Image (tube, rainbow, N blue to C red):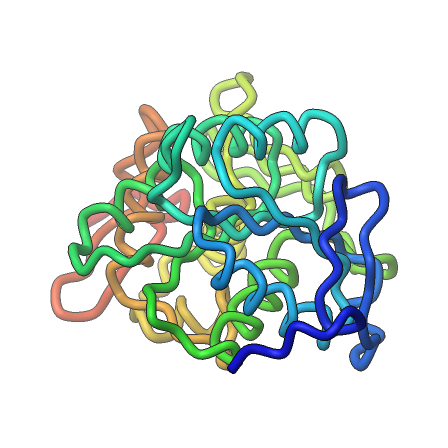
Length: 257
């Protein structure tokens, strides 16, 4: 039976006034997470375990209310169920992506197509119901680690290959003098390739370098993000090559052959 003691669950009306239960992990303290799911029991379960890890949480049960909350007080991350009343999870994902808020999708659907669509719309990762709280919190930590810039990070100046210029200090990519609208994952992938031109990376190696070893991400997630990055590279998309039976490689300045 779920623990419903007053000190275990306290619903905060808005993100500006969240309630913490136990701050066990100081690394997570202060991160505000909006949980969006139409099932109250699921929301409370997620909330309980996140607050046990030190996160500040708020809950919404439909897409319209969730969007109003996000506009009023931008969270550090969103846990988003695909099946929502008001505004669908996929439509809401598209709107949230424009605000550059990290998104962890939750879905009860067995079909992979919905998760792939969500990733294409800008979600950073997904998890299927039923899930273990431990896996969910691990995925959330990984998403935040990838998307939140910490003080003291080393900057590396600029890189240029062909018509692509990356300014790491400004966290900006220009393609033929036009700014490229890359997600943080796409930026990290491109940076890895540009710092290691003409080197083939297996999918497993990309998973380790971009997503980290403490979280499970499928090969399909890598392929989806590579596809999105290629499209945004425009006339330079051919530099991002598929190496059959291996993975991917970014062609440097030397012409092939």
